[in-house]
Length: 130
Picture 1 (cartoon, rainbow, N blue to C red):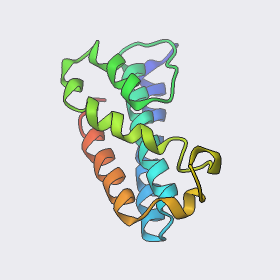
Picture 2: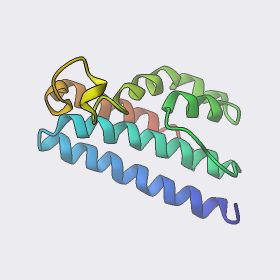
Picture 3: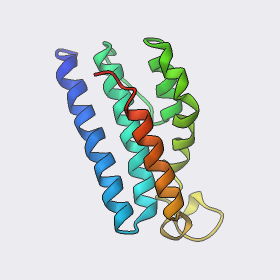
Picture 4: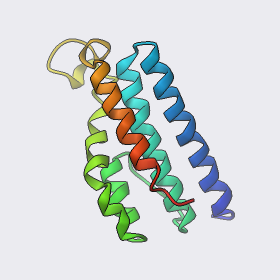
């Protein structure tokens, strides 16, 4: 990657926007979307961190797996690994009806789910050192 700092900042900027969008969707009672965007925020912040550390390519969508990759650069990421893992459950079921045993995502997630997802995203994003 030619300019790892610029690429990391692009990813981090989108991570910040995703967290803001999660809060916006929460206020509009779009709880499934808020949960998904909270997960996306942490995923992108972790990717930003990995790019900043010199990763040429960063693959995957799992915040838990990306957190494991980040731990190779800084063991402090072990403190958020379980929280990151909790966010992974918001990646697919918040969007696809066939990822649920019944119903649809917009009805399956509630305000408490969205609050928890946003809280986890806020806690996890504070540890990213860019």
